[in-house]
Length: 213
Length: 104
Image (cartoon, rainbow over all chains, first blue to last red; front, side, top):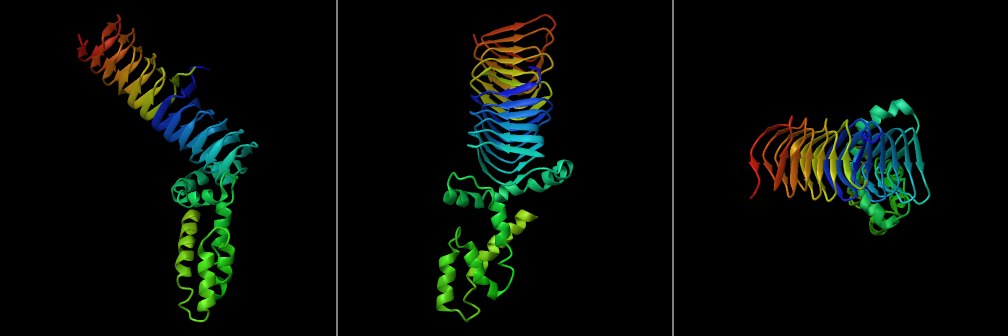
């Protein structure tokens, strides 16, 4: 057993790609990509900036930035901090664990190959909007960035009538609310009035379209 | 087990930097820098320059080995590259091609 277990010690730093058969225990720092066929555990001292793929992933603590994909299950124990998506047939998140990202459970075989290919471009694009979300919501566990972005997506598509309602939807997280209200108050009739709002929404719409693609 | 172990079946392509011991049973390509000892076990493959404390090699190393302490090439070792260390042993049955610099 010991022969099959790979350990990244707490004072070790690995930059690059870790792949192969067997299990992996990360107590140090890893940057790059991790793909193993056995169990993967991240200890409390682990710092990971990589997409992780394994049979089972157990996060006992530490911080991970990247997507977690497991063929059987993912367990996040108290103290775990994950910024990235979780994809596995079964996902357990203990009280005290922090997750910021999309969670997908169930549907064993179907999403694995499909999700793996779809997810790869996602983290890089999602990385941009996340800091602003994190700044406002703080350490609170947020799993709805994609949900809200999807909810925001429809408003930009319809023409002017929908725009007044659109800023209302965006009111909580975005700065577009004051702009929208001022514009609505000063120049409600001209078509040019909402123009500044449109690019803002379009940016969001493009971003969500990219996310979806 | 504070040390870092690369198990058999595992391949690391990249750079490892550590203050611990490193035991290589699998494959490492890139660069290995350890303040403490490095052990390449039989079956282990290192295609990288190694900078370390005491190094014990029973597997395959392609690359230069630079040790602040000693380098032991054990039976079954296969090393292609230059070795720089204060003390070097080459066991019977070890294959070695390269220069030796004992830094006297």
